[in-house]
Image 1 (spheres, rainbow, N blue to C red):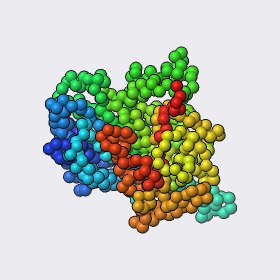
Image 2: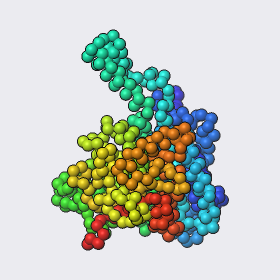
Image 3: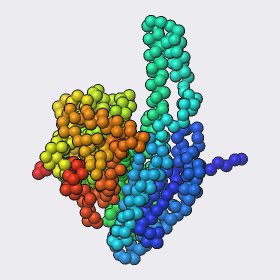
Image 4: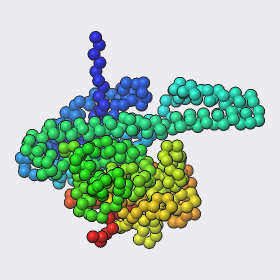
Length: 538
């Protein structure tokens, strides 16, 4: 009888403690899902190749090192009598990012953390931070090549090509036109396979989400195992001690994976977690009341959000950062189409980084989702990452201020529409949970990274879109630095802002935020902080 060994779902490829391995207070890790890019393979092929073989062989050693550091940290903190807390930050990449590219992202962040290690040595934080780069199985555009695409073609597509070729080249008149139409449909389907968007989306929802759940569960189990003081563990579970902070930094399709992950992680059958279902109508609960009732009871809202944020025995959702979000713009509206409201309201702070000139979302993603997202209008099918803040280019438009959803708008090809319009979105001005929208369209850091120029009116926007698209295409040839979709991580100021928000949040006692109002104005970034309810409302 042959005994088969079950393959692991995850691999811990990289592990770097800061400021030193002898006295760490910050661990930077690269965690990889081992799911294959193609269903026929039993394992992720990249992990068996020479570039990653050494990293994969150190998988168990890296995990043992993490276990030792956590155990030593809790022992040291208890002997010092300090308040101890572990903070976990998970960064999730987007579409068209193979494992090799994720490793480059890891190295880029590692250089930044190494530069900051001196501050950790001089003034170590009370908390232990785990920063995880999570690599789900994403595929490079065009991967596999034409031979593999042809070999995987279904019989119906072969018949479509055969019929189209027969009619297009041997028939005449309307039959030839039908043949050309068949060929066009077949070529379109082949192109959709080549760009791998829907394949990545399938892998994100099928493997990426559930392997990330396993990652969080493994950390949950590890922390319970390494805490030597059982009484402290009981206090942590009961809420007497602060729970482990769990934050997410998602980019592009990684925001889709992140929001799905939160919905899976949350125990919706917990009595405390589902009590909100009856808060609006004690008689009929969710079956008779409005679908998304507005709530202006701030204290009740805060208590509800704290209950909903609890994940398992130890974790509490803290910060959610969505960058170039490849999810529908309806996600932050107050109507029934906001199917992610139950996810977003669980976080203490939510930050949304947007770029009006993100041509990947504006053209490619919107086109791809035209086939799957049930929108009845063109502008209703736009992605969340293409939001814009009204009047950002006017006097005092840059910087940080308090606002509401009426200050957010979408720029279509021919018109501009506010989220609080009366025809499409019909959104209320407050959504019941706090939201920060950070518009980086005009971001300047000694050079442009997200758009070619600052468009101050509707006529200029079209030329900015065109120029930005051309610059992004030139960027693939190393002729331009403009990247309207991923440029958030290229400029030093914006990258520092992203990581500081992920690590510390908007207001923290450990370190002043780099994104002060003067700095935001200097770098042409507009930030609107939207409270959960109307200010001054009692």
